[in-house]
Length: 196
Image 1 (cartoon, helix red, strand yellow):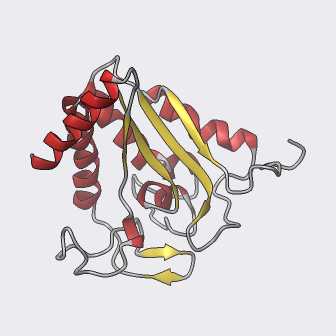
Image 2 (cartoon, one colour):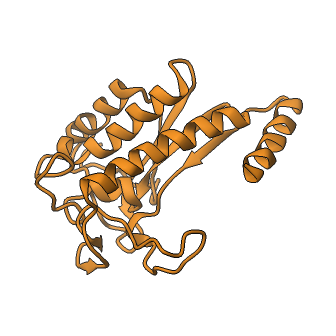
Image 3 (cartoon, rainbow, N blue to C red):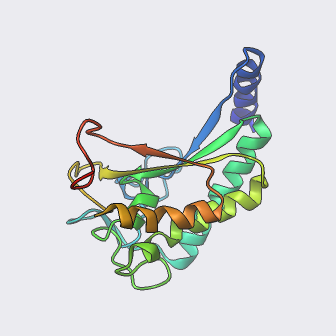
C-alpha cells in the first residue's frame, strides 16, 4: 500500500505535466537464481521446466498451481497499477524472463497445457496472463506486450524461427487483449529473419 501511494504521486505528477505513464509488470522466473533474495527470501526460482537457459538447471518445474498463482498475480498487479493512476501496463514477456521461458523450447520442456513442441502451446501461459490482466483492468485500459528473441545468457537464441511463426505467436496475444507490441531487438541494425 505504501509503495502504491508513492506511485500514485508519481502518476499524478506525470499527468499534471501533460504526460502519460505505463507500468511494466514482469517476473524474472529462473533468473532469480538464489533463494534468500529480497523481497521474498523464501521463494525459489520459478521456471516452466527447471531451466534458466538451455543447459542450466536451477530448480524444479513449476506446478500447475504455481503457474496459476503467477497468472493471478499479474492480474492483481495490473489492477493495482490502474488504481494507482497508470495509463497502461506493459507485460514483460522478453529477455528470457518467466513468460519468455515458456516460449523457448530450450527452457519449456513441458507436455501439459503450458508446453509442448508447438510454439502456440508454449505461448499459452503468456496468453492466459494477458486474458487475466484484461479481465482485471477492463476493455479500454491499454495493454502492451514486450517480446524478444534474445535471452539473458544467450544473446543468439531464437524462439521464433520465421515471420509466419511470429504471426502464430502474436495473434493469440492480440486476441487476448494486447493493444500494442513492443519488440526488443538487441541488434536492431540486422534483419531478424532471412530475407526480411
